[in-house]
Length: 401
Image 1 (cartoon, helix red, strand yellow):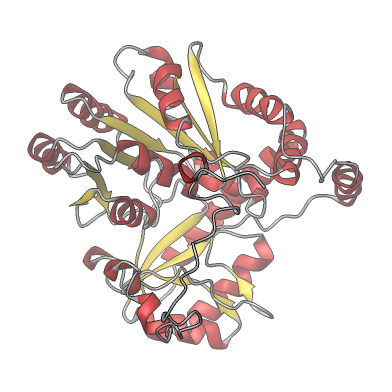
Image 2: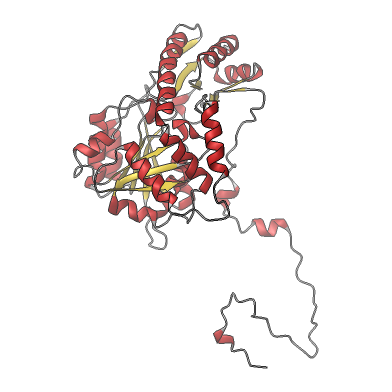
């Protein structure tokens, strides 16, 4: 039998066995008892203090709380998609088909020349990757992330989990950008990442393009990255990619993030980030391998081949949004209904908790955002749905005020 050199065996090798002791040592002395509390102590205190992301139970409810597209695929497209997905080689990892998906998304977004694209398991993963790429562990310095608030909850959460400081700059009381405050915060904190949701969630506002560009200029002047979050672009009257295309040098530090969730594929979980190729390539380095499944990728490709169907759905929702906003502004008990450039509408009522619970009792789920930020006191966020869905939601809201 050959001797095994200990220095030649990796420490993770299954062949590495601890030498046995002889003599008076007990070979099978019991280990210290293990308890869940001992193991829990290894979890970060801030994580232990958190709550996991919760999804409201919705069985038997009209779901108007998550800005989902209410339309399903037509029956003939359902059958075609099912046949296509059924033929996939699910025993294989995702391969070159991901490149086809990137090309299709680049064409759909009319991506500028010299830009690159990285895919994520929803935009949530892309937000995590951006924080991971910009964090500065072991340097003695902490990177900063900055965003107007109230805004998307994943921005501060990703900063916390990846070790960045987060600076939230309050919007005005009417949910407009406070440009002087944003410029001052950028000068003071020099953020590595500045997020601008365009339109914003949960306020559904599409901010002044000139103010947005000046904020982008300020962030770029101190070497920061700006991420334009266009999750709700299908329902908005403009997109910032036009400015990126018109002035590429001025916006060379800008990344554009979108998701197919609001396009109509919330269940597929696919986000994409586009920007100057050199910058996108750095973000791609921290992406987990095979993060977009074979099924998700093929479903997204199928949808892009039928983009006209989803565009028609978005147009219908924009039309229904106008009807919904007009009805809300005429409803007694609605203190304020803001303009919307997304598939949601923000309203303020006298008692949002009472209205929310009343609507829930009437089998309609909406989002009570009043605890998210002081500026959102007594505010509800309503998803724009079909004419029938909106009518049912309005009736439940009116009865609950």
